[in-house]
Image 1 (tube, rainbow, N blue to C red):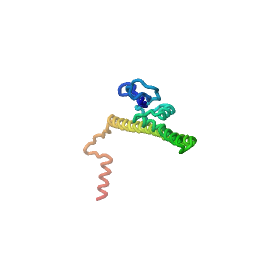
Image 2: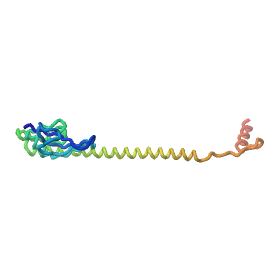
Image 3: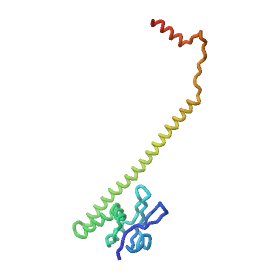
Length: 180
C-alpha cells in the first residue's frame, strides 16, 4: 500500500482550510485517511501551518511520500532537515548529539525569522493605518478651512465721495509729489 502525506480540503467556498493527513494514495482527496497530522490555513499572512512534527517525521522515516505542497511545508518546518540529519546518524557520518544540536540551532533561527516577519507585517500595518489617518486629517482640515473662507464675508470698503480721498490715496499722492 502506497502511503502519502497530503492535504484534505475543508472550509467553505473561497475560504479553504486544509487538514494535513496520512492516507492511502488510492483514497479520494477528502475521503478516508489513516491519521491526521495537523492543519494548514493559507488565508492568513504568513500562512498558518500547525502539525505534529514528530508524527510527520515518523511517517517520513517509514516511507510515506509527501505531495509537493506538503513537502514544502515539511521543509519549512524542518522535518525534512531532521530526516536528512537522521540518515547521517544511521550511516554513521555524525552522532545523534551533533544531529540534535544542529537541528535545534536551525529551529531557533527559523522561529526567529518567522516571528520577525510577523512583527514586521504588524508594524507595517500599523504604520499604514497611521499614515492613512494623517492624510485623512489633512484633507479634513483643508475642507474645514475652505468652508470657513466661504462662510466669512469679505471686508466691505466704505464708498468714498469723488472729492474726498482716503488716507492711502492721500499718502500715495504725497509720495508722488515728493518724488517729482
